[in-house]
Each structure stands twice: as structure tokens, then as C-alpha cells.
Amino acid sequence: MPNYILAITSTTDVNDDEWLLRDTLMFKELLGTTTSNHSQWIVAIHPRQLNLVVGDRRSERSPDIRDGFTVVEPIRLADTFLWLLSDMLRIIPPDGRLILVVCGHGEEYSGNILVGPDANGNNPFPPLRKESVETFIMGANLRPDQVVVLSTACYSELWASPCWTLVCGAEHDQESVSIPMSISGHYRGGFLPYSRDNPDYCKETVVAVDANDPIAFPRPTLSAAAAWMEDFRRTIGGIADKYASTSARLPTTASFQSRLKMIPAVVAHEDPRAAPITLNPVDANTIVELKELSRRVLAHHFRNTGNAVPIMKLAWIVSQGDAATLTPPQQHRLLRSLRRWSRDCARAEGIAHTLGWVTTNPSRAEEWDKPHGVREMDEAQAAGARIREEFGTSLAIHRWSLGPGSWLAAAWRAMGRPMVEEADWTRAVMLSSI
Image (cartoon, rainbow, N blue to C red):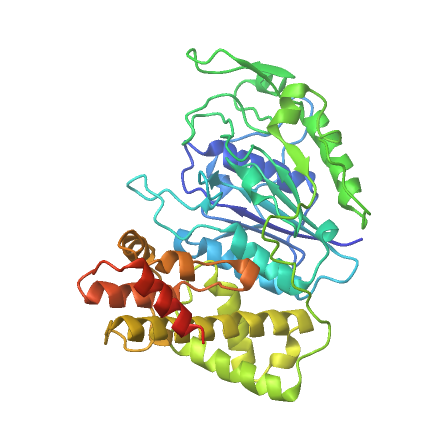
């Protein structure tokens, strides 16, 4: 049963975020991966910069951290992960297993995996979004039991999805704990053990290193971690009928079970997989439509956001005359996504026309090329123009682009940010849908 492993470590801070690199090293070692097309480990900073020994140096070997990592500029890290995911999904056989390893800082409420920080301590780089990963997984038509997401990030339970089994390091409203202090402010130990000058760090129970936080945090020895990882590998080694709904397979101590738990594939309230996808390729006439829609979206639409990357990559393939290389589910999902974008562009222009809003920058919604506009949509929403409500992204209905809504918000702003009566807005929306 072949495993295909793609991992991302999104920190650039070798000092405060050492624990993220440490977990990365251990997962790479314990998953038994090698440098190949079946295993890709991308990082923003190379682990070799750590003067680090993982495990008890007196009795157990340390992982080889010299090879097998690809360093990517922070501004391109999330997009590179998605491109590699797309390439990997194209070669996974029907009996294959995809394992995604995510080590990084999670964003509260959204669960986005932050990339950074920069020199000023901020995270200005594009994050890795769960919705973007879902888009690719859904397009590949894999069963949930074929995909495992393993994340130690804060709030990582927010990555629960109908598309995969999640092994997460924190509840949806919980920070992960770490040594040394990271953004979360905690000092209480990472997922896996390590040692520098003191091999006692690898003992079963380790007292926190900061005097202000004297809580003991049980952690397994390297042997115990390896035993658990071997059991985890056996679990994901074949196509299982179902996954355990508890953390019974995780390391034995109660504290450790609360550190990492397994969540089977769950159906969200808005299930993005609800609409059935036919396995038949689109017909010749529809290919013509798909190619035209691809040409239009590639002409102006921004390409560097999480939701846009998978759509734009598939559209580019179609524009090159290679639609037949896409799987039937990819063809149909791209078609639905581009039809939704085209229809939303027309609706945005219809609403602007009805309300008397005129803009020439640009004059057409589909020519909007800026990857922003959320703030303007929220401002318009507060003034009665419920643009965010009407055009906000929702993968459940294949709405992946903020472009139409952003263009409409720009038109509202160009008219001086007018207040909009509810009756006028309702009428404009209704007429635009005819």
C-alpha cells in the first residue's frame, strides 16, 4: 500500500519556533520517508540551522536532517504546497494513501496556517487555508479514508473535514503547547522529545523549563514515540473501512492523548462534497465552453490566493488544450467553479446597474485583478449593501472567488459609499438573478 507524504513547516523563526522544526524532524524520521516524488517536505527555514539532537543520545540514534527538505521563500510557501499537492494527486494510484503533515502556527477562528514571521514579527505572507486543500482533494475524488491530515498547530481541530481523517494537536479553540515559548506563550513541551545538553529531556515526565510555569507535562521517550508512529503507520497502511472515533490508538498517558487526537472524516453543515460528481468526462461542446471560461478567468483574475491557485492551475491546463489530462471529477468541478464565477460577475454588474453605481476601474467585474476587497465589502455591508453576504466565498456552492464582490464593493465606494435601503438592495439582487 503506497503512502504519498507531503509536509509543510511554515515558521521562519529558528529561535522561538524550534519546537515546530523539532516535530518536523521527528515526523519525517518516524514516518520513514525518503527523498522521492512520494515524499515532499517543504520548509521556510532549514532544520540544519538547529544545534539539535533528537532522542536520548546515549541509547538511540538521531535523525538525519541533512537531506530531504526543500527550502521555499515564505511568500511562495503556501502556493508551493498546493502545487505539489496537485502534482502528487495526479500520480496517486487507486490504492494509495495521502498523508499531509502540517507544522505551523494556526490562526484563531479560521484555522489558517500562518507563514512567518517577517523581520518585524508579523505574518504578512499568504497562509495555507484548509479550503484550498479541500478543493484539491475533492477534485481528485479520493475517499476520506485515503487521506490523513496530521497537524500540531494551534486550533488544528478546525481542519476537520469530510475529505480526510484528521489527527490534530489542539481543539478548535485551544492553543498548542511548546518549548521554548512560541507565539502561544506557553512553555510546556512539544509533541515529541528532544535533547541538547541534557538527555533528561527525553524522560517520560519533564518539568517545564520556566520557573513561572511549573506544570509537569508527560512526554514519551523516543522509543515510545516510535512505537506509536509504527502503530499509526499500520493503521493508515491499508484502506480501512472506518477509523476509530476516539484517541485509543494514541500514546497511552491521558495528558498525551489530550495533546493529539484522531478525528474521523466528519460531514460539515455545508458539505462541499454533497453535490455528486459524475465520472464521465465532459462532452466536446462543454469542453469548448470550459476552454472559453478558462481563457476569460486567466485574462485578469488574480492567481496568488489559496482559493484561486487550484482553479487557476486547472484553468491553465485547459487553456493549453489539455483538458483531457484532467480527471472527470476535476473537469466537472472546474466547470462548476468557473460557471459560478461567470454568473457572479454578471450578477454584480446587474446589481451595480440597478443601483446606479458606475465604475471604470475596471468597468467589467471579470476584469477585477486585485486579491483584496474584503474590507470594502464589510464597509458596504454596514451601509446596507450586503455584498459580503451575497458574494462571500462558499465552496459548498463552488463560489471560490471574491473578485465579483470586490468589484461591486469598489463600485459602491466610487459612488461615495452611499447608504442603501433594504428594499432597494433586495430589488437589485432579485433583478440580477433573472
